Structure formats: C-alpha cells, structure tokens
Image (cartoon, rainbow, N blue to C red; front, side, top):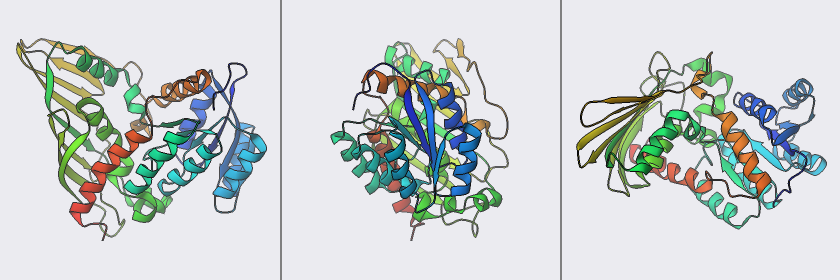
Amino acid sequence: MTVEQGPPLRVAVVGLGDISGVHLDAVAASPHGGLVAVADLDEARATTVGAVRGVASYGGGDGLDALEAMVERESPDVVHVCTPHDRHAPMATWLLEQGVHVLLEKPSAHTLAGAEALVEVAARSDAQLGLCFQNRYNTAARALRDLLDDGSLGAPYAGRGVVTWRREAAYYARSPWRGRWAEAGGGVLANQAIHTLDLLLWYLGDAADVEGTALRLALDGVVEVEDTATFRVRHDGGATSVFWATNGHLADSPVLVELLLRGDDGQAVARLETDLVVTRPDGREETTREPVLATGERAYWGVSHDRLVADFHAHVRDGRPFWIGAEDGARAMRVLETVYAASGLRG
C-alpha cells in the first residue's frame, strides 16, 4: 500500500509498556506522521495514555481484539508494535494482511520459526514492515559503516561486541514476561544485546557458523531466560567475531563494538563505544563523536528512535522500501537460536 503525499500519516501505537513512550515521543516529533490512537491489553493503561496524548484508546480482550477494533475504527496508515515479544509476529502478520504498514520493536519474533514466517508474510504484503534496530542511525555507528564501504583501510577480518549491563529482580517483577521463554523468547541476547549483534552482522555479514552458550549467573531463581551469553561467529564475508553479553554487571556500561581491518598499509582498529575512534596503521587517531547523548534512567536506549521513526514514515509516504526489515530480524534470531540450542537452558 503506497500512501500518497498529502496529510500526515495516521499513526497508532499498540503495546504501552516502557518502550512505547519512546515511540510516542518519536511520532510526535515526526514531520510525516501524527498519532491518532493507542491500544493495550490493559484497558486502564490505554485509557490513561490516550487521555495524556489526546487520542482515541482501545483496550481489553486478548490484546488482538483491541488492535482489530482500533484498525477498524481509526484506519491508521502505520501501527507501531511495542508489545511483549511473543505478540510481535502475530500482530505484525495480521496488520500486514490488512494492508497496514508496521514498525516493529525488536526482536521480530520470540522464536526463529516466527521470525522466518514473518519474512514470508512481509515479502508478499503490499504494506511495509520496518524493524527497530535504531542503533544503525547513531552518528558514530553510521560513520563506521561508511568507513567499511569506503574500503581505504582495507577489509575487516575480526570483530568483537561487548554488552555489560545491569538488570535486577525488580526489573522483571515490573514486567514478568521479560523473564520467561514463552513470552520473551530469551534474556540478555533477545532483549538487550540484540542491537549490538545486529551492528556486528551489519558490519561483517551474516553468520555462517556460530558456537557459544548461554547461562544464568546473576539471576538464577529470578528468571528462566539467560542473563549471560558468549559466542563466536564466522561471518559470510570471512571475518570472525566474538561476543559477550551480561545483565549481571553492576552498572549499564557503554556498549563496545570493535573491528580490526587489514589493508595495504597494515592493521587499523575501529572502536565504537559511544564515539567512534579509528586508529590508523601509522598510529594516528580519528574520532567521530556522537553529537547528542541520551540522559536519565533509560539512557541506554539512545536517541536514534526519532531518526528511525521519521525515516520509516518518510519511506512509507514516498512508497520507497525501508531498509531494515523482517530478514534483518531473522538473521539475528538465527544466531540466538543456535546459542540457545547449544546451551540447553531452554529445556
């Protein structure tokens, strides 16, 4: 479905948990869309958010009931899906089948089978599906992608990703689904570190082979899912990366992505840790700074949702295919599925 240029897109949000506030603010800032409705399984929550945002609200039933009623009555062009993970693929599938464009929070599904089925649904739909891997819109992250495309420092042959964050029992008590396989589909890999994994796959290529494991070190007895994971990836392009993620740290430390590149002049190092620092073979350093940093309790989300949301809306308005979609979600889930299967943690 292509939306002709004209009035702003009619945008709705389903799922009004923590991340929805970021989407609601991003919709308000988007020059291409305007919020018309919200929906949530919790009717009281939907009513409250709708009143605050000055839009219609829908709630109750099994969640899908509210979504269907909202689409029927409000005719949105785009729906942002911000629900628990197990509802991502079913809701996105239903919306795409109705011809409604979807901007979907990560992960694309809570299982690999669901993620791959969504690839097929998106491929045959006239509507677009965009996936929220918003870290690709960070200034420093895009500068690293440009460096790889330029090729002047050679090709990357090795990489590493490190995510050391803190999640305590209270985090899971607020939203118990986050700690359960049946609803979350995973722990630190599926809910936090998937953004960093996506960057490594974006930079180095799809995973050809994965070896690793997942375990509980800090939250055993609190959650079913893993709080720590480590693995090694051989990428299609020939590079190899290593990855470590944990929710057992005592702080939310900056995420690290580091690439080693080999060219005619020797080895270069690109280190992305908020800013991008590139060390050339002769020892010279060049820095690309992230110009706007998020602050506050949830600063780890960054500021790039606004950029991604506005860009997705622009693609829908123009009828252009968006560049982050269902297949990107599936390639990340293939890595997670391999690690989870090897760990035996899921039972």
